[in-house]
Image (cartoon, rainbow, N blue to C red; front, side, top):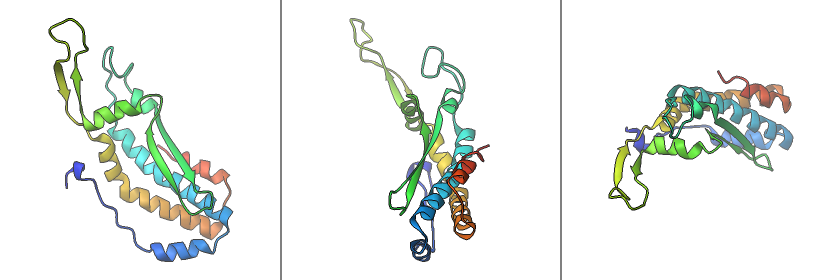
Length: 171
């Protein structure tokens, strides 16, 4: 499988899990999902840190080495009804488009003007699929962390403060 083809994750037991969650109070479900999604983001963040390019390009995309890493962000959002949510890991502060250029490659074309090079292709930067590689490498650990965290919440109960504890596990 090439990284361009994506990757698959097989998850079983969804029907049983959904039936169990339907019997839990909405507030506990919300906390459980928030905590589990935060836990699931940790392996992705750790893997993405290892794969993220850190080079600086004089006068170019990165002002200093590590600019992408300095602008990595994680967001967790929960459905109002406590039926699920999402976690996203990406780059803020205008660095999302730079990460996209690096991930998929890009072309550098001269600007317009009265020169003979106006609009000419100067170079092509090949793809460096660091985000997809990190996502594929961390997928199983991410699913395992989600399941373990949700099970712990359902067995022991917890509070909203425990959600922040999950984010603090980032290496």
